[in-house]
Length: 157
Image (tube, rainbow, N blue to C red; front, side, top):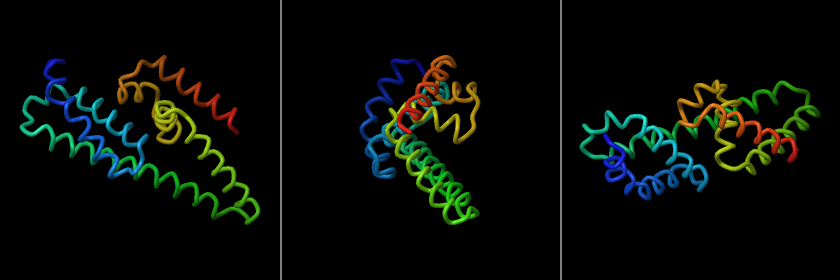
């Protein structure tokens, strides 16, 4: 599928995809990130998209799965954090919980792109090469954005 065909078929569906993502994720930033992830995935699959008969349904299904993955990752991070706190003495657990909340608030203040890259690198443990494949960004750009995100977190904390 050529770039012009991709634009003609898939880009008009962007608003529909955003509404679906927003309904599932209940967050503007997360919905926009999910739609961006969808378009990256579709672009990477563009050679196989010519056989898709109903782009709206196909894209909606992919998007739903991407949103569910986001929710699962979010829950697994929370569960891991709560699990770590449950083994600590009460006073340490309280301090750890407060630190975790501060870090979470600081991460929420990052720009969406930096937040996503930092999550891919630190939470999911992906290598820079894996992130490059997933996002389509250059390795240098990813390193710079992750570094900027870390500096911003240090400032906020």
